[in-house]
Length: 272
Image 1 (cartoon, rainbow, N blue to C red):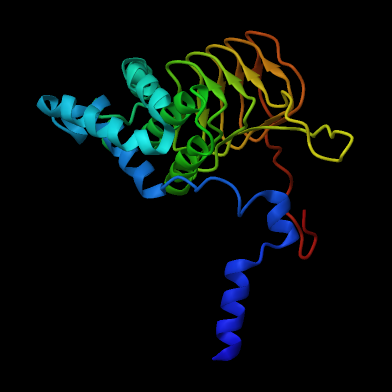
Image 2: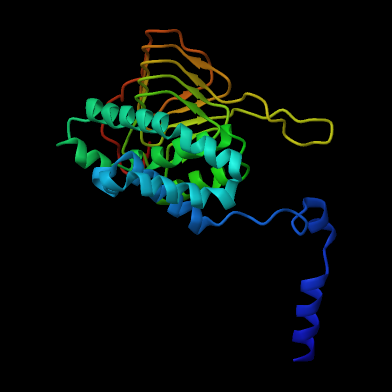
């Protein structure tokens, strides 16, 4: 018991050199993930009141949303975010419309709002992106990671995504921090818009420079394709599935993988 008390006291009082270097004992308290989950639920209720809230209760939901944001972000950011809600709603409605336009399996818009992981993901992303632009630290990343855990879709809150954005299925999609995506872009499951490599500063730390793709308007990228580096995919292009792409693509391009080749039947033990 003495060892237990001694070690407990040491852990409570001692700051290791690693902790001191990273500021983990002196930094501000982390935001509350539970409060951020409640914030997202209120955003959903305000944006889709007929599904997650009540039209007559929008004013109360906005008031509660502001009350939750205040201790997490401060007065200026909380007030600015409330002013952004109409634009966030407009963008989310374009995302719902884009999914309906691109998926013949959709029966009605209610199905999209309730069932499609891309909508849940975009509620988180568009909320997080707005908060990041307003200067909120850490919180935007927590919000997108909540969606990542729930949907399997990983979008950095700093990525720039235009209107009418759609993801079909979605599991395994990765969109990096400096990615720029235009309007009317469609991605399928497993697409990676990532970095090809990193540049390092004199101290050996990776530099935060533009390193992810630019996807222009009206582009479709099919499943399990990786587009890496600061390359530009020109507007009105179609990128087929299972492609590894590290160079620019001009507008109006249709880029496909070579078709599968039928070979004679293998003999015993020959393999591929």
